[in-house]
Image (cartoon, rainbow, N blue to C red):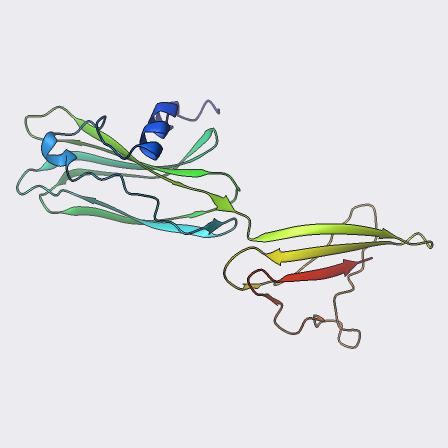
Length: 219
Protein backbone atom coordinates (compact mmCIF):
# COMPACT_ATOMS: atom_id res chain seq x y z
CA UNK A 1 0.00 0.00 0.00
CA UNK A 2 1.37 3.38 -0.95
CA UNK A 3 2.29 5.63 1.96
CA UNK A 4 0.16 8.33 0.36
CA UNK A 5 -2.95 6.15 0.67
CA UNK A 6 -5.04 6.71 3.78
CA UNK A 7 -5.75 3.15 4.91
CA UNK A 8 -8.71 4.37 6.96
CA UNK A 9 -10.57 4.85 3.68
CA UNK A 10 -10.34 1.14 2.83
CA UNK A 11 -13.15 -1.29 3.45
CA UNK A 12 -12.03 -3.68 6.18
CA UNK A 13 -12.44 -7.46 6.09
CA UNK A 14 -15.13 -7.29 8.78
CA UNK A 15 -17.01 -4.59 6.89
CA UNK A 16 -16.76 -6.62 3.69
CA UNK A 17 -18.21 -9.74 5.33
CA UNK A 18 -20.92 -7.71 7.03
CA UNK A 19 -22.13 -5.68 4.08
CA UNK A 20 -21.87 -8.29 1.35
CA UNK A 21 -23.26 -11.24 3.29
CA UNK A 22 -25.73 -9.66 5.70
CA UNK A 23 -27.92 -6.68 4.69
CA UNK A 24 -28.29 -5.31 8.23
CA UNK A 25 -27.17 -1.93 9.47
CA UNK A 26 -26.56 -2.55 13.16
CA UNK A 27 -23.06 -1.11 13.15
CA UNK A 28 -23.89 2.19 11.46
CA UNK A 29 -23.38 5.19 13.71
CA UNK A 30 -26.76 6.85 13.14
CA UNK A 31 -29.64 8.02 15.33
CA UNK A 32 -32.50 5.52 15.51
CA UNK A 33 -34.84 7.67 13.41
CA UNK A 34 -32.43 7.42 10.47
CA UNK A 35 -31.53 3.74 10.71
CA UNK A 36 -34.89 2.54 9.39
CA UNK A 37 -34.45 4.57 6.22
CA UNK A 38 -30.82 3.64 5.60
CA UNK A 39 -30.96 0.64 3.29
CA UNK A 40 -27.97 -1.29 2.06
CA UNK A 41 -28.75 -1.18 -1.64
CA UNK A 42 -28.28 -4.55 -3.41
CA UNK A 43 -25.91 -4.72 -6.34
CA UNK A 44 -27.99 -3.20 -9.17
CA UNK A 45 -25.31 -3.25 -11.83
CA UNK A 46 -25.33 -5.28 -14.96
CA UNK A 47 -22.00 -6.62 -16.15
CA UNK A 48 -19.37 -3.89 -16.44
CA UNK A 49 -16.59 -4.41 -18.95
CA UNK A 50 -12.95 -3.44 -19.02
CA UNK A 51 -12.46 -0.14 -20.87
CA UNK A 52 -15.95 1.20 -20.13
CA UNK A 53 -16.65 4.57 -18.54
CA UNK A 54 -18.49 3.82 -15.31
CA UNK A 55 -20.80 6.76 -14.53
CA UNK A 56 -22.95 7.09 -11.44
CA UNK A 57 -25.12 9.62 -9.64
CA UNK A 58 -24.51 10.52 -5.99
CA UNK A 59 -27.45 11.96 -4.07
CA UNK A 60 -27.20 12.84 -0.39
CA UNK A 61 -30.58 13.95 1.01
CA UNK A 62 -31.48 15.35 4.41
CA UNK A 63 -34.70 13.38 4.82
CA UNK A 64 -35.69 14.89 8.16
CA UNK A 65 -38.67 17.20 8.58
CA UNK A 66 -36.90 20.15 10.15
CA UNK A 67 -33.46 19.16 11.46
CA UNK A 68 -30.49 20.93 9.93
CA UNK A 69 -27.37 18.98 8.98
CA UNK A 70 -24.15 20.97 9.25
CA UNK A 71 -20.53 20.40 8.24
CA UNK A 72 -21.63 17.80 5.71
CA UNK A 73 -18.87 15.78 4.05
CA UNK A 74 -19.37 13.17 1.32
CA UNK A 75 -16.30 11.25 0.19
CA UNK A 76 -16.31 8.85 -2.76
CA UNK A 77 -13.52 6.26 -3.06
CA UNK A 78 -12.95 3.41 -5.49
CA UNK A 79 -11.13 0.45 -3.96
CA UNK A 80 -9.30 -1.92 -6.31
CA UNK A 81 -7.36 -4.71 -4.58
CA UNK A 82 -5.13 -2.93 -2.04
CA UNK A 83 -5.52 0.56 -3.52
CA UNK A 84 -8.10 3.21 -2.74
CA UNK A 85 -8.56 6.01 -5.28
CA UNK A 86 -10.29 9.20 -4.17
CA UNK A 87 -12.85 10.11 -6.84
CA UNK A 88 -14.48 13.10 -5.17
CA UNK A 89 -14.91 14.83 -1.83
CA UNK A 90 -17.91 17.13 -1.36
CA UNK A 91 -18.13 19.52 1.58
CA UNK A 92 -20.88 22.01 2.43
CA UNK A 93 -21.53 23.99 5.60
CA UNK A 94 -25.20 23.06 5.94
CA UNK A 95 -27.91 20.92 4.37
CA UNK A 96 -31.47 22.01 5.12
CA UNK A 97 -34.32 19.57 5.72
CA UNK A 98 -35.43 17.89 2.46
CA UNK A 99 -32.49 19.45 0.62
CA UNK A 100 -29.98 17.29 -1.25
CA UNK A 101 -26.40 17.31 -2.42
CA UNK A 102 -26.09 15.91 -5.95
CA UNK A 103 -23.11 15.01 -8.10
CA UNK A 104 -22.49 12.96 -11.26
CA UNK A 105 -19.13 11.17 -11.39
CA UNK A 106 -17.36 9.05 -13.99
CA UNK A 107 -14.47 6.62 -13.76
CA UNK A 108 -12.69 4.73 -16.54
CA UNK A 109 -12.42 1.01 -15.79
CA UNK A 110 -8.79 0.04 -16.47
CA UNK A 111 -8.32 -3.15 -14.43
CA UNK A 112 -10.18 -6.50 -14.54
CA UNK A 113 -10.51 -6.82 -10.77
CA UNK A 114 -13.36 -6.55 -8.28
CA UNK A 115 -14.15 -2.88 -7.66
CA UNK A 116 -15.77 -1.53 -4.50
CA UNK A 117 -17.32 1.93 -4.59
CA UNK A 118 -17.14 3.40 -1.07
CA UNK A 119 -19.37 6.31 -0.07
CA UNK A 120 -18.56 7.90 3.30
CA UNK A 121 -20.94 10.44 4.83
CA UNK A 122 -20.18 12.59 7.88
CA UNK A 123 -22.32 15.37 9.35
CA UNK A 124 -23.37 17.16 12.54
CA UNK A 125 -26.87 17.24 14.04
CA UNK A 126 -28.14 19.51 16.82
CA UNK A 127 -27.57 17.98 20.26
CA UNK A 128 -25.74 14.96 18.80
CA UNK A 129 -22.15 13.91 18.39
CA UNK A 130 -20.76 13.95 14.88
CA UNK A 131 -22.47 11.27 12.79
CA UNK A 132 -20.84 9.08 10.16
CA UNK A 133 -21.77 6.14 7.98
CA UNK A 134 -20.44 4.28 4.96
CA UNK A 135 -22.11 2.56 2.04
CA UNK A 136 -20.48 0.02 -0.28
CA UNK A 137 -21.25 -1.10 -3.83
CA UNK A 138 -19.30 -4.02 -5.22
CA UNK A 139 -19.11 -5.02 -8.88
CA UNK A 140 -17.03 -7.41 -10.95
CA UNK A 141 -15.23 -6.33 -14.12
CA UNK A 142 -15.31 -8.64 -17.15
CA UNK A 143 -13.21 -8.67 -20.30
CA UNK A 144 -15.27 -7.67 -23.36
CA UNK A 145 -13.17 -9.67 -25.85
CA UNK A 146 -11.62 -13.10 -25.49
CA UNK A 147 -8.38 -13.45 -27.48
CA UNK A 148 -6.74 -16.74 -28.49
CA UNK A 149 -3.62 -17.09 -30.64
CA UNK A 150 -1.96 -19.81 -32.73
CA UNK A 151 1.44 -19.83 -34.44
CA UNK A 152 2.26 -21.60 -37.70
CA UNK A 153 5.85 -22.11 -38.92
CA UNK A 154 6.73 -22.60 -42.60
CA UNK A 155 9.77 -24.12 -44.32
CA UNK A 156 10.78 -20.70 -45.65
CA UNK A 157 11.24 -19.35 -42.12
CA UNK A 158 7.99 -17.42 -42.09
CA UNK A 159 5.81 -17.34 -39.00
CA UNK A 160 2.05 -16.93 -39.30
CA UNK A 161 0.04 -15.71 -36.34
CA UNK A 162 -3.66 -16.41 -36.17
CA UNK A 163 -5.52 -14.32 -33.59
CA UNK A 164 -9.13 -15.22 -32.80
CA UNK A 165 -11.33 -12.56 -31.21
CA UNK A 166 -14.66 -13.47 -29.60
CA UNK A 167 -17.20 -10.94 -28.37
CA UNK A 168 -17.93 -11.86 -24.74
CA UNK A 169 -20.54 -9.13 -24.22
CA UNK A 170 -24.27 -9.12 -24.94
CA UNK A 171 -23.93 -6.15 -27.32
CA UNK A 172 -22.24 -5.67 -30.72
CA UNK A 173 -18.65 -4.40 -30.73
CA UNK A 174 -17.06 -2.42 -33.54
CA UNK A 175 -13.32 -2.99 -33.92
CA UNK A 176 -11.69 0.20 -35.17
CA UNK A 177 -8.28 -1.38 -35.67
CA UNK A 178 -6.50 -4.69 -35.11
CA UNK A 179 -2.70 -4.51 -35.16
CA UNK A 180 0.15 -6.81 -34.24
CA UNK A 181 3.35 -5.00 -33.27
CA UNK A 182 6.71 -6.73 -32.89
CA UNK A 183 10.10 -5.32 -31.93
CA UNK A 184 12.16 -8.15 -33.45
CA UNK A 185 10.20 -8.99 -36.62
CA UNK A 186 8.65 -7.24 -39.60
CA UNK A 187 4.90 -7.87 -39.48
CA UNK A 188 2.43 -7.78 -42.38
CA UNK A 189 -1.32 -7.85 -41.85
CA UNK A 190 -3.27 -10.17 -44.17
CA UNK A 191 -6.65 -8.78 -43.16
CA UNK A 192 -7.16 -6.20 -45.91
CA UNK A 193 -8.64 -6.38 -49.39
CA UNK A 194 -5.95 -7.17 -52.00
CA UNK A 195 -7.32 -4.57 -54.42
CA UNK A 196 -8.14 -1.92 -51.83
CA UNK A 197 -5.42 -1.93 -49.19
CA UNK A 198 -7.35 0.40 -46.89
CA UNK A 199 -10.47 -1.81 -46.69
CA UNK A 200 -11.01 -4.68 -44.26
CA UNK A 201 -11.79 -8.05 -45.81
CA UNK A 202 -14.74 -8.15 -43.39
CA UNK A 203 -16.35 -5.05 -44.90
CA UNK A 204 -16.39 -1.34 -44.14
CA UNK A 205 -17.79 -1.88 -40.62
CA UNK A 206 -15.68 -4.35 -38.67
CA UNK A 207 -18.43 -5.48 -36.31
CA UNK A 208 -18.56 -8.41 -33.89
CA UNK A 209 -22.00 -9.50 -32.73
CA UNK A 210 -22.48 -11.09 -29.28
CA UNK A 211 -20.62 -14.45 -29.02
CA UNK A 212 -19.36 -14.06 -32.59
CA UNK A 213 -15.75 -15.03 -33.33
CA UNK A 214 -13.38 -13.80 -36.03
CA UNK A 215 -9.86 -14.75 -37.06
CA UNK A 216 -7.11 -12.32 -38.06
CA UNK A 217 -3.91 -13.40 -39.77
CA UNK A 218 -0.45 -11.83 -39.62
CA UNK A 219 2.88 -12.90 -41.15
